[in-house]
Length: 216
Image (cartoon, rainbow, N blue to C red; front, side, top):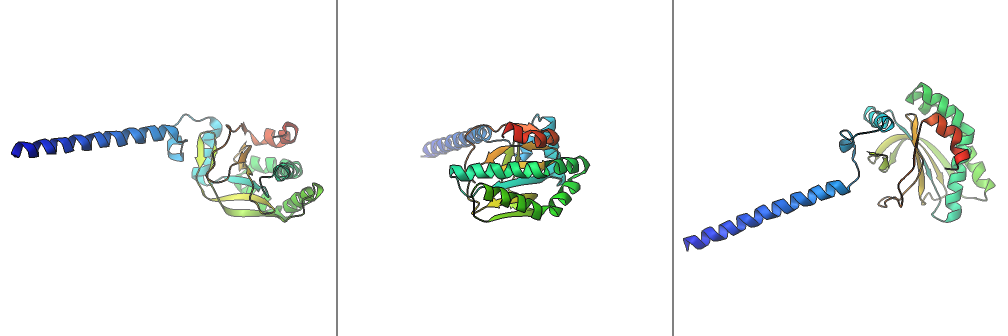
């Protein structure tokens, strides 16, 4: 009877050890499958631009741009890009100049020109036949997480310019206005993965001056 109890205890111990090993293996595989988090990024080999973004996030000196399309219909998605182009054409040089000074200069420029930016976005929308609401906000806004290269900015409050077309329920366009780097991608709705790897373009001056020509 004593030997049976010892044998049963030994079997249970072996099962526990096997379970712990399986859990550790599963955690390791999951870690490999997940994108870099901010904590992981700190130890990862980053490009100078990614390092600048990481430093900007840690210091709080980061400003984002968010353009929300009315819906996922092709016409609404095209309009989102037309509005983006109109804003860059109207304010790109001012943004590039302010970004050479400081994060605060960029933010002040956005605050001072919010109504004008809204007017430009609205005029562009009307030119393409969109009669819905067009709004622009500058401030500390709640934004979902977004990955830029090897850096994942977590969901939270950021200083940002947000332009909303109509209901703002379509796939969106994202960019980093400060520091002097930008990621031009179509944002995915929460919970969706990007269908293809984003194309990263850095250096704000070059991006602001060439966005229209490149048709990004």
